[in-house]
Structures are given as structure tokens and as C-alpha cells.
Image 1 (tube, rainbow, N blue to C red):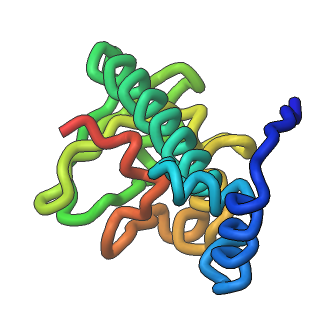
Image 2 (image 1 turned 180 degrees about the vertical axis):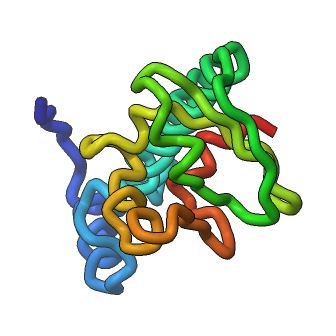
Length: 146
């Protein structure tokens, strides 16, 4: 919803000057700057990050309470086909890494619509039965419980 505000001529020219300096994309950004408000894109980014953090906390709580069907240790975040494939979709497995913490995943995370579906499609996983990351990708961090 767009609302109209009325401003005097001096304020309008100040807005034009600020915008012409190239510091701001539009009048709204200029007004936000003048009033010490965060820019629109920054606000949207903060909202998105907050939502992701909240989702991650929900996942962490859910995964802390999950019944773990399989646990294994590896120096890296590693997926072992022989341990994961026999699981049911609702089963969870835990991977404890030496340097990157402990991760808990459900088998659903590996289905074709799951976050790690590309792992099961990889040559390494399908032929050798192992897929690992030198460093956990950012999308895996929401599955880390400690």
C-alpha cells in the first residue's frame, strides 16, 4: 500500500540533491537515510535472515529430540550410502565430524526434493558409496546440532 506524504519545497530540493549525489536509489532511501532508518533492502535481508534463524532453531530442536537410527563419525561431513540407504524416510542419522560439529539429517533430506538430493545423484555416492565435503556447505549448517 502506497501512502502519500506532503513535503515542503526545501525538503524536496534536499531530497533531489541527495539523490543526485548517487548515494541513494530513490526518494524512499533518501528519506530513510535522513531519518536514520535502515534502507529497504537491508530491512528485507534482516527479515529473511531472522526467518532463516528461526527456522534453523526449530530444526535444531526437532533434531535434538529425534530418534537417531544410525550414528557414525568421520573427519569431514560425510554421507555413507551403506548406512543411509536402508533407512526409512522418517529415520534420522547423525554424523559427528572432528572439526565441524555434529549434524543430524533425516532420510527425507536426501530424497529427490530434499536439500541434499544431488548427493545421491553423484557418481561418488552411487558408485563408491561415499560423498564428503572438505568443509560443510552453508546449506548444511542448519542441520548442525552442536
